[in-house]
View 1 (cartoon, rainbow, N blue to C red):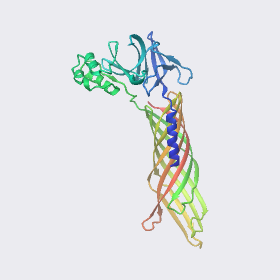
View 2: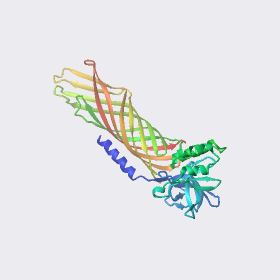
View 3: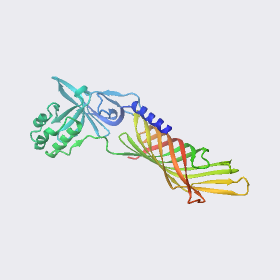
View 4: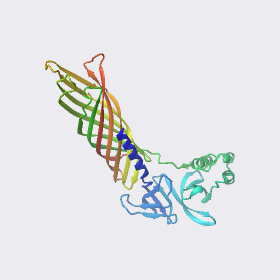
Length: 390
């Protein structure tokens, strides 16, 4: 529990210090109509910065600041469209970056640069003419703006001055016109997949419960390896791994209880682990930091314990074989740091803490058999190479 609490505290700290934006692949269009491709910084939390930052290479430190009088539009990740529009503000023309939410013959835009009770501001555009939606008399604005759409006139009182409701208005407009299929803004829906391999250094500590070795806490250091598949949707990641664990340990000449003279404990573990980790990504240039937590499934592949006991008389030797239950569960917590070597290639360094519980049965069976538990607390440091599949 101490390790889990530490992980949760670390997760909170990372959340408070996380970057609000990252550079995304995309392009912008100049006032002359030239398309410039590269990487743009875009605030996903508020959907729009008042300035866009551009650089041609994601690894370079320098960037160029783009303002509404420099470009006509910008597109990021094939989904996020930003346009430069001129509106009337207190009788004066003002150039703004507007974020397109939906389109169906008309375009719905959002502006996040306003402050206080006027944020955010929503605009409709038809035939190039941009109009600020009247938040104080929305129903009246709808009736005046859509006199040729009976459905919108009928539902005018139901709409609200908020994103989801206004997107619904655009969808309804598409149903009563011959417009092209409407576009609705959303976070990129395509889930991206990474595959890779990992090598690990592990330190495992055993704790026995309800067993003669309950005061013994052996620690085993060993190497491990496995495969992983990681998917991410926005900033949320899911990673599933397939790891093979083989650990061997022996305690010689130990006296587990008063009646025993000598006891040898032989641990032989052959395990297949399937960890499922859920994470949240924070970006800073080519670096990504991702706290993670999740369940672990452990599958025994013929693992066993042997407990060889010699009585004080030296005449009788008892041997107990402890077979692990086939399936058991545990939890993990960790922190991964990834670096983009190339667009499709990542290098990952990761720390994880595993808390695993295994149940085993003692043989020979006495009074129907005896079941015990042992706990493993494993610290693991790993390095992985990941490749973007799609």
